[in-house]
Image (cartoon, rainbow, N blue to C red; front, side, top):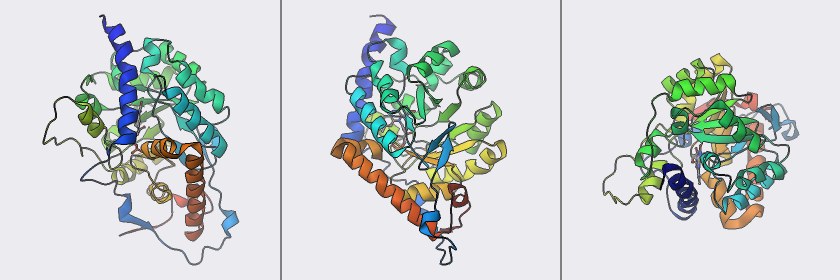
Amino acid sequence: MNESIQNEERTPSRKRDHVDLCVGEDVTFRGKTTGLEKYELLHNALPEMNPEDVDTRVTFLGKHSTLPLIINSMTGGYEEAERINRELAEVCQEIGIPLGLGSQRQAMESGRFHESWRVARRAAPSIPIFGNIGAPEIAKGVETGTIQKLVELIEADGFAVHLNPLQELMQPEGNPEFRGVLSGIERLARELPVPIIVKEVGAGLSADVVQRLLDVGVRHIDISGAGGTSWSGVELLRSPLRESDNPFWDWGIPTAEAVAEARPLCEEAGATLIASGGISSSRDVAISIALGANIAASARPMLQTLMAGGQQSLTHLLREWERHLRYMMFLVGAKTVAALRNAPLRRI
Ligand SMILES: Cc1cc2nc3c(=O)[nH]c(=O)nc-3n(C[C@H](O)[C@H](O)[C@H](O)COP(=O)(O)O)c2cc1C
């Protein structure tokens, strides 16, 4: 078989494995947490406002979001992904929050599952939606025109590039070739008509990496830190090696630390800072914003809720997060998400 036919078959089955393992197995970090639990918002008994004064809206990729929360990049490119993306998109449209779609590598290889991405925009005409591709494709020198077609497929407002060297290393069929990624990102940031988001997938972006991305013109950074889904863990479960002592399950920079370190750099550059990796409660959203994020993002917790209880459960969960976030903002006297970013934190 030639390489492209092999890939055409492997990519859908890998994306199916990822969803199945993320839903059915415990793939969270084992000996490391996000660090968000080490902080608490400082209670303010004189908020000098009423609960209805709270405004949770933010702007993301030029559009409104009713909450500072994104459902982060997950899937596309195999049969069932169409239903998952449609259902996620419908919930996002109802709540009014952004949606990231999963890697569109398979869409470059074949037209067979294009509908699994296209469905999102059809289901959610007005929310911010962004596409996705992995760094190895950038290293291979993918043309801007090819990425532009992926953007058009979903009428995207932005396009995410994921940096996942650890995942590629652990992935049985992975491709950890990262030479030339930064200059490829620089070219995309310059040539693509929509903003580029650069994200990790749960091992975190260090301050140095964030600075290098800002230096080449990236203005949307998702640090996607450690403490939530371990992508090394997911790939180790797929690996035939069955290693007994693998030091990489817990590899990575905890989300809280990555956000705090990226904050001054992003502020200086006027860039949007996204906090993800283990965001699994309204409290995580609030703390990550008080640490410096402009918006938070959650992936596996959203998928698990959808798969366990359907759209009703996910909508219910998001409404609950919205209500609790409002209460928290009231209790620290923050009328806006911008004010929440400056709310005092206590270390506990
Ligand atoms: C089932 C699943 C599939 C994912 N696929 C992608 C992907 O295709 N591209 C990407 O950038 N990130 C992907 N991710 C990573 C998430 O966007 C996120 O960075 C990571 O899971 C950490 O967030 P979490 O702890 O909320 O899951 C995926 C996550 C899940 C749960």
